[in-house]
Image (cartoon, rainbow, N blue to C red):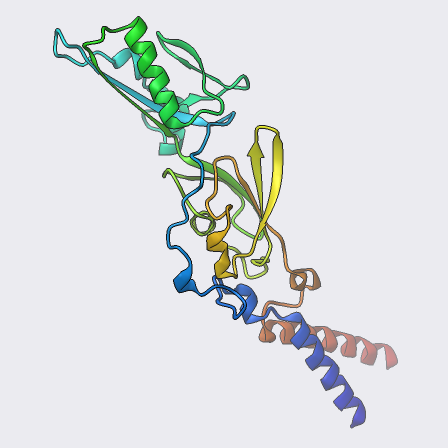
Length: 268
């Protein structure tokens, strides 16, 4: 009888220590030591505008209205690849966009190469307008240049939907990025998500806690193009006992039954 009680206590201890606590899978928890959600700014804009990096794909559209003919004369500056007509939005962005090469340059038909590394979209627009006025059109022409990132591309690995991800918007926060990748699994560590970010001087690793509402104040709350998001596994996954009490109990009970059956067969 005493042995049974000991085994039951041992089994209960394993179950309690092996399942994933409810608080570890909840996002944006309000903790007593942290700022109330009501006092956190609902908009947390990045302090600085995004600056173009190597391998970024830019969507550039040029519209020019000639003052003499009153016609738009910009087809040659906005090429469309025939191979991309039936492609997906992401593929069309790749074919029709302008990729920033390893030298930090883009090549535009008829205009040539432009050094855009480290520039903002607005700065690139002004650069192209100036070039068009000086070399292609007179000052009476109406020139409209729009520069956008051809999708916000990032990578997810670990306990989340893995692979290359794309969001077709100018800005997205970490929760939008996670949702787009299919959410974090029940075995993912939401308290310490790693963001590996590209900088001109190299890569840096940043840590954010998605279970805390203070994440909204983090400078890494909004992702950037070419970010890599890594979600580490919880120790419960390594133990392989299950994510909840029922799964853990079933696993342990099956193991004990197997061991007991083996002992009975051997002892006969």
